[in-house]
Image (cartoon, rainbow, N blue to C red; front, top):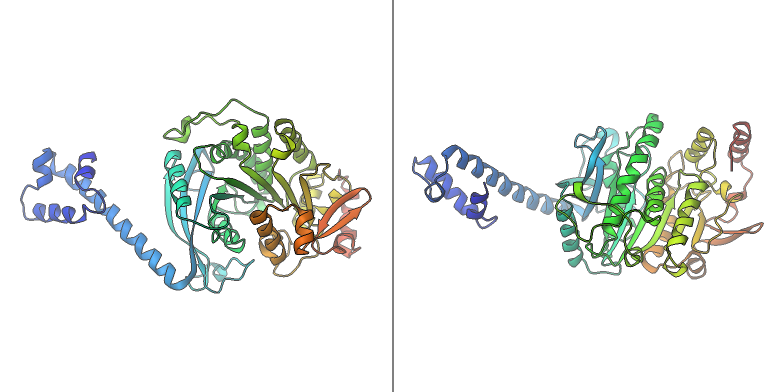
Length: 452
């Protein structure tokens, strides 16, 4: 096989390949067989493998042309995944890859256009994952592809990465689509940035909350390993932003807590496969790459978040800390259900911040209560659906302005003071409205013995 690949270097070896096949069909001994004296059967298997590679190149080229003709954009999403190959459970190591996603020309920010009732997908109308390039556990190839892609993408966020960690009830394909849509709507991909989705083995069903809650504990360890990689000097990012939604914050916060607590130091070079990669804390120079940690509708407790903050402040000087932004809502029905079920208030619930506000200047709490346009019943996905929230995140990523500065410059968010606590809100009066939902919610919290 190795000799054939050297003899037929792709793509220049295509014509040589066809000549070899013609000679064999004519009953003659091919040049390759004469040169290497290998059995005909072995040569044919090698030729078939090479031909499949040529066909894949043509399919990729045709797919790119079709997507370009019919869509408003064709973008790449890199990913790391700790799900096994048939998506049925947790893998024993991280796998990596890259997928191409097309965005329709008429795409509306905040909308992930998908076929109705799993009908046929259409490039003109839908967000489609149309090409997949798995790297398996080849970490070295993954890093090389990211560095190569960065060189081709000029723009205001060129050389920067957005790491997206999805939440509960999200399967693999939906996670890729969400990452692509988010990167498009934040103008991150168009601005020269690289988007990476971290995919953990969610069951992708509303009925498996406990299963997802259990599996994400292990995923946090894999995510810690992956964060060590993307913050390392081998990956040439100048800045890294991390955004986690819902239960995905459990993995991110646990992973970052471990990262800041300085476990054994990482290796200085990236090995051939991730199976021998030793995860651990990077140098302070690596940590300075991390400029934003964004928690949207976080299904975690305040205690978990506070442990991470203490670990961060114990490792870094104040000026080296990333900005921590918490997007929360008092009308998030999914988090209300989670609070009642877990009997402890969630970080993504604005009501919890009225009792427990982080006392650090680098933490901004931004309230999204009352945002209903383009939202689903649970009002849980405002970070990717509400235009005003998307614009605020975009401003944060491109300017690195803290909420105080965004408040003064763009006036999309407003300062709110409650007792001794200060936070920010898109709709200043919404967080304190005495609605029927808020009344029932408060009563349920009391009856269930919910802790702040």
